[in-house]
Each structure stands twice: as structure tokens, then as C-alpha cells.
Figure (cartoon, rainbow, N blue to C red):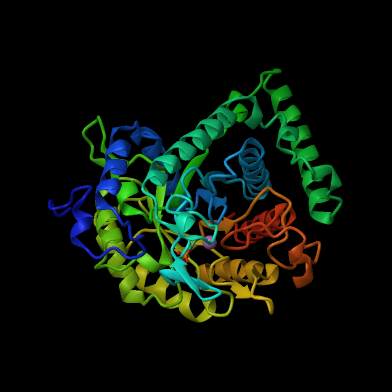
Length: 452
Ligand code: PEP
Ligand code: CO
């Protein structure tokens, strides 16, 4: 790596999607507070995730990355966090059962507070105010005080991330995650879920119970301790560079700089310019990183990014998350896969079937059609296979809450059902049944493409 990199060298480059803080001294004070606070994750955990992603790159594991489009400070609550974890655990169980592959679980969680926006301002009833950029920047409520980018929110965001992560760690290590008791992962409303998907899941859990009892009987009655806990990692879009660089620390082992605010930061579709500040920041950190790749990406541009961000071609370092949209994936993805392969860049390919499929209803509500999401995912498997590559994971926006934000799915939600429980402030998320249905879909495809 070029030795001009420092955790602050991004400041010499144009940074897209940053808020306009009115008072730079106030921002500096918040950054100095963050710099003194302890890291949220360690370099060992980060390296451990990189090893698992390297296994996924080789086809030995599968990555499931999911969570809210944006977390909110108000939703940093027991049930909301536990539900997301429960749903991801249920999904990974469905996938592991069919694929016989290790699942790398990564949440869009404990720091997913900053959002890129298409415009700096929003006009409502003739009043123009700064746009909402996520709770770590300003408030959603449309009034001047709430919309003012407030640097103290950086510290509040760190604290919420720490509280969320603390709870996740406790749940992952303790009895909650024990595979012998998958009933712990039932969502509060799950008994009301009478549909086909929930039934399939219950059947799977019951056959899993028998398989475990059989295996442990053969082992002489011993309990398999490895099944009592899970690895669960965090990720977010590292958009707000003053925050990200304040949490970037040199490892005490002397092996370089890590973003210690999350295990796996990613670069969004709007900030992946090779000349921009985000790419400069990312090239110097040791974490495994993701880059979103949308339909405007050119094959040679993706190759340049891969070489710049992973010059040593280190396995597990770079995940390319394509989000082309159902209608564009067949034309846009193959040339990119081909170019990356020809350049011999090793990457983990992940499909985000959400962000290319966002549409507006007649009433201006953002939604996604479940069928578009499933189609894009299905097509991805086939395209990778045809290009001699393979899909190693999925990136999803979902919630364990019983929302109605995406149309379709087994309950066949229509546009008029969206009014029932539309809670997102940004992008529409899959609800419990829709997410579980996607997990069964992934499981089916992994079986279809399994190398014997
Ligand atoms: C997101 O993941 O919420 C997002 C904004 O995605 P993208 O950068 O792919 O548009
Ligand atoms: Co989103």
C-alpha cells in the first residue's frame, strides 16, 4: 500500500454524501470524544470474519447479511434487536440444513445509522430544510431544529451501537443461541403465523431436533458444545467519514489499522468513486469490506476498484455486493463477472436483490415487489453458474417485526395492505414470512447448484 495513507488521509479527497455541519468546532469536539472511547469490536474478531469470508469465497461457506435499511435511535430496544437476531438465526438454520455449508451471519446492525440521499434538501409545503440523513446525523421530523445536522448525535450513535452490540454478544454466546433450543428464536407473534412457510419451518425444526438427538446418542450421550453458541458479526455502510475515522485504531499487535466500530464496513453505490474520499479511507483499513455495485458500474471500473482496494488479492478482503435490479441483472452482471475473472481478482460475490427493485406506489410510497426480489436472487445463481463463478451470499433488508412494507409473498400483500403496518423511514423491508420464504428459496438454489 502507498504509504501516504492515514486514518485521516480521506480529507484530501472529495467526500460525497456528508452533512453540512454549521459549526466545525462542535464537530471537532464530538470527534475528539469518539477518539477517546474504547473500540466496539476487536481486530481478532475482524480477522476471524475475514477468514470465514475467505471460506465463502471458496464456496465452503455462505454469507447471510441482513437487517434494517436504517436503524433508528428510538428502535434500539430489547424486542426489536432480539427479533432481528431470531429471524437471522431461523433463516440461517433453513439455509444450513439444505446447503450443508457453514453460514456466515452478518447483521446490518449496531451502527447502520447514516443514509445516502438523492438530494441535500427536502421541500414540504414550500418550506426547504436539510434532508434526513439518518439518526446519527439529524432527526426525521420535519422542522428546522430536528433537521439541523447535530455533531453530538455521533456520540449518541456510538452509544446506541455499543448497547446493541452488547446485547447481541450476550445472546450469541449464551443459552439463547443454543441449537438444541430453537424454540428460543420464535417471534412473539409467531403462533399467529399460520401460513405455509411457517409450517415448513416448524417441520424443519422438528426434524433437526431428531437429527441432533440421533447424533448425540451416537456420541455416547454427549452434548455437542459447538452447537450452543453462534458467531454473529456486525456491518454498516461506512458513510459518515468523521465517525468512521474516529473509530479507526491501530491494532495492538502492530498489524495495521482497523475500523473498530464494526466488523465489516461497506461502501455504498453512491460513494464508490475511485477518486473519492470513501475509497481512499477504505483502502487503508484491514477489515473485510463490501462494495455495492449498481447497474451504472462499468466492468473496467469494478476491476480498478478491486485492484485498488485489494492489491494483494487477499481472500476474504473484498465482497462485491451487486444490486442491479430484476430487469437489468441479465444484461449488466455477466460482463462485470467476466472482467473480474479475467483480471484474476478474487472476490466474494453477494446479491442484494433489494436496492435495484425499489418502486413507488401511486400514492408515492416506496415499496418492493417480493417477486422481483426473488427473481433477481434466482437469476443471480444462474448467471454466476453460467459465468463459471458462484454466488456466495445474499444481502437483505428485513425486520423481525410484523410490518407490511413489501408487496407479495405467501400472504400476497397488495398495495392497499401497505397501510396496515408501514413503519420504515427509509427503504421497505421484508417481514418475517417474506424473509423466511427467501431463506427457503436460497436453500433450494444451493441444493440445485451443490457440487456433489
Ligand atoms: C442501502 O444498502 O441501504 C443502500 C443505500 O444501498 P445502495 O448503496 O446499494 O443504494
Ligand atoms: Co436501503
